[in-house]
Image 1 (tube, rainbow, N blue to C red):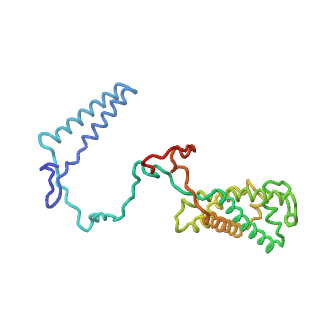
Image 2: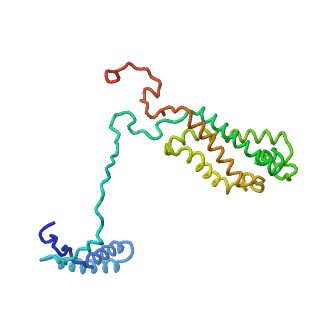
Image 3: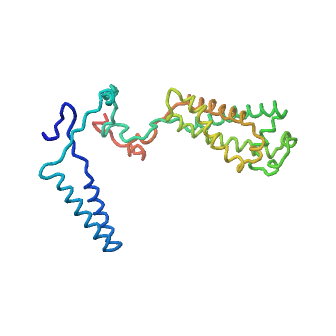
Length: 279
């Protein structure tokens, strides 16, 4: 900033507001538009551009026009910026973990299978408990689950849903087991990315609530019988029980490093001689 823009005790000198630059820009835009419209539009643009340019030139020469802008009252000024004492740790080029994507360590897939089966068992126990208390039959929730793949159960009445059906039992066990294993394996990758101190909260409560909300609009399509008879309070309790039990089993399992931190030779299984730097 030169001496003409120097701050004063009562304010600061700034260039005087002027409409000429906007008028010049409008003229240039009309000139460009004239190439695709008509010569008249370009002629108007040339005229406006000349007027704006001359007016702008007179604002700056021989002496630029300035005005004194007073300072804002001290009470209305922005507060000073507070510098945080925390620092960010940077990855060094060539060091281990450089350009690595999180998570660096995940649970074994075997723990996801175990956790999924454990969570599925807890969920099944609560579902059968609901059927025993409210419908006086443990087969009621099993037949409702099987209705997604068994047309005879989709149109069954309450009395039929309370009875044992071998085909419905097999379909319900297989579908529930497969889905539980898939969700449990998803937990092996998902849990390490959650806040370490609150994994039980996010993995056991929040995530089951999220997938329950995602399933809600699809129930009428996937399983209309379950959508018509489901007790949403017990359904959410069963989902949370799966998250708590399955998530706990996965969380307590051992973690392993992901291959992204390995060298190219290690990923390919190449056994090379050690260098002096490796030693």
